[in-house]
Amino acid sequence: MATHPFKAPARAKINLFLDILERRPDGYHSLETVMGPAWPVDAITLSLSDCLGDEGRAFTLECSDPALPTDDNNLALRAARALREAFPEMSGAHIRIEKQIPIGAGLGGGSADAAAVLRLLNQAAGLGASLEKLAEIAARFGSDTPYHVYDAPMFAEGRGERLRPVQCRLEEGGFVVLCPEAAVSTPEAYRWWDEAGMPRTSARAGDCMAALERGDWAAAIETSENAFQAVVEERVPEIARARQALLDAGCLKAVLSGSGASVFGLSPTYREAQEAARRLTKQGCRAFACSMAAWR
Image 1: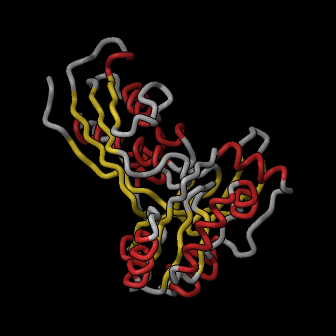
Image 2 (image 1 turned 135 degrees about the vertical axis):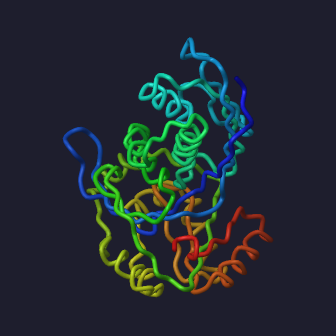
């Protein structure tokens, strides 16, 4: 029962604001974060198959990046199997990921792939599951994955599973995503944060959201912070160099995304972000200009 392929982008995200509140009794951490779409983008292709038997064969996965596992360690494959648990009548599928989002970059690449697979399977198999149902399943596979189901600006709290849309009213604004040659393990970043005395941000998530909702990009830039930044940067010097490169290229501020290692530089306009990205690309950096228009 092979079908024509279904395709969807899996967009990266940045955490314009990220604060860690506490370590919870269950070992996870409570956070507050304001997230929205960014570049680069993975491309997901999915074709249904007629395999209804052994779960080990129902879903197959290939990836353009040999560094990405294609076994049970891959979030996209695990998400597909979890959806089939909820909808046993669903057939299997072959999944292909064209990888552009770096691994271990704090840009939500694995989560974006998993969420895109959930959306594509829902569409291809005609399951009719709501986004809320898909986000509920996605929450089993990381703090960012429920956000990626919606792929729109969101305020997230708890472990990242409690989401609220952010009504961004910006008319202008841009940022540059810079991906240094480094990777950060999220569990390690949380451990470093614990060991550093659990530092908090000086701004608050509500201030960042309010700035976006009234269309005040200058205020949003002012409130953009990440509680991971100092503790991760101390251990991964490439991050400090990347942030400085963004500032040298003309960005007003440079902030860590997620637990790193990618950083983003904030510019008054998309045109200025494009110019900064061009300068960095000429220097051999991997940089992507993004417009805040994508957040509207």
